[in-house]
Image 1 (spheres, rainbow, N blue to C red):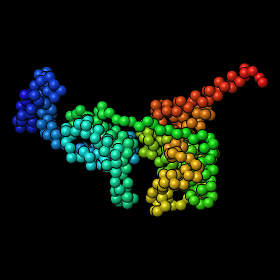
Image 2 (image 1 turned 120 degrees about the vertical axis):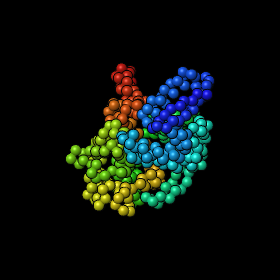
Image 3 (image 1 turned 90 degrees about the horizontal axis):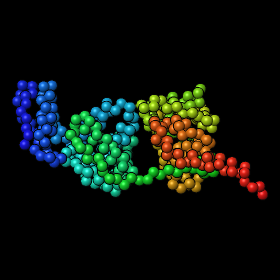
Length: 376
């Protein structure tokens, strides 16, 4: 057994370093000497290593979650408020109910695997009352489980980096059954059918022009759903025919600065018409009740009204963004140009569309071949 006697702030203390041995939980003499030297350095600085160890050993998952959500934003200033809100939901609604009472140093990979399995099975799903909207439906499933796992892994990494946990990260090397990426791109005829369906729904007042405009703008700009649904009039630059979104409103956040989205004639015309009938709200698509929020019903309207009318099955709102990229590629746009239009922080995010770029190249090859094919 290795131990060290040290003095900090005039008080003499003993600290057990660990048992002698060669195993992963044991100490060699050389490693013990290094740890003892570190203890002496901390003690001279007025830091009590024993007190720090006791604090770490007593920290639970719930305590770590509270600490991370309180201190983490100061350490990650470029991370969006909406991302922190999602982290809070994942940690408080899923992790804490399952693992909250466990001490950090007792959590194993098996516990993490069990957590993923439980969230996937919907064991943490519930209908929660909130002050803001009155109700919050917490869902389970594979996607939620995967995002929650990633959030908890990042939380443990932060704890290790800040000295709140000695490690190792129990989320490391956990085997997951990752879902294959699901991407769907509308054909030009399907996109035309979608626009025709929106025209019909607006004509018979099933949806309002303002509600239909959300989907039109998503298809015409390639913007993310929340970038359009939460659009403010102050973010619409009519003089330069573009949207200018601050870092807090974009996924890339502070990494890319303001996001500028160019408006084609059709998108610009939609916003001009909406501006003429705007109310007092700061939002382009305001909530039906009150003036301080934006509408959040686009998913329900899409599922219950738009998809059936357009005869599209299994198409997500986010697929409109993918479709924008596919149409741009078909028109000969380069991947870097598309990445900039979509607001990607790096090229890896745009590489998912690389396989689509074969279509215009193949068409070019076919046109060359036709020049030399036998005439009949």
